[in-house]
Length: 286
Image (cartoon, rainbow, N blue to C red; front, side):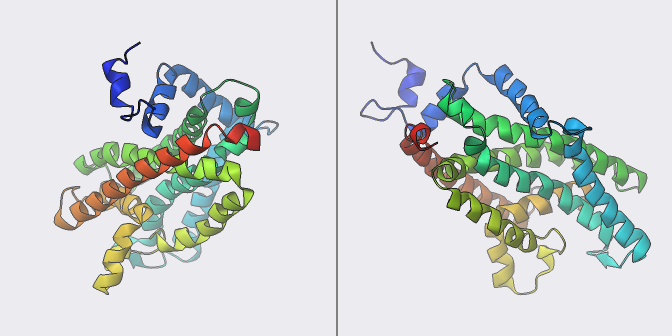
């Protein structure tokens, strides 16, 4: 039987589905199930704990409280960064970092840690990566709301620039979801790869401007090389949105935005290739 128009778009000349086509097809009609699994994933992660999924909010909130106490009380402000109190500079960096770090780590572990869906159930494997990332995103929404209330109290909001959140947040989700197309299958094949991802997170934290302003780097070569770090882009994007009141479309940020879009397109091809090659082999490995 001939392919439909949509099926033809996601196939190669030889009639075989592309990796992107497989992932898209596996998500068709699955939105409600994915959302339900995202919520269940949060519940199962904190199963047995008295506060349950609330721990997903309590842990990062406690970190933010410690930051506030250290800089606002213990160190009496401890100076400013780029003209802003250090606590608020770090607050707007930590909140996206909590999501990014969880999306990278949980995304890489998603297939291995949910192998029952692969080995015992006929379940679309790419959906595992999706509901895992959505679970992290749900936590992120709550933390953004807490951050926004703090910024409102201190007079840094509201602002029309806050609407840029609806650009940066979906783009951030897409980027790190697409990244799992590569990391999750690789980690399912090799525990060493999962350990490698975990080991580089500390380095990514210090290279990504959570506690220092990458825009102020004086060496132009080093400063522009930081454009290649997508984490740095999203951290600065949140600061532009909630702290700096800077537009999305200025000259320097447009260049960085173009680079991140280019990296995302590269990851789509790389991740879909890995997914297509490995998806049928992973059940036997697990």
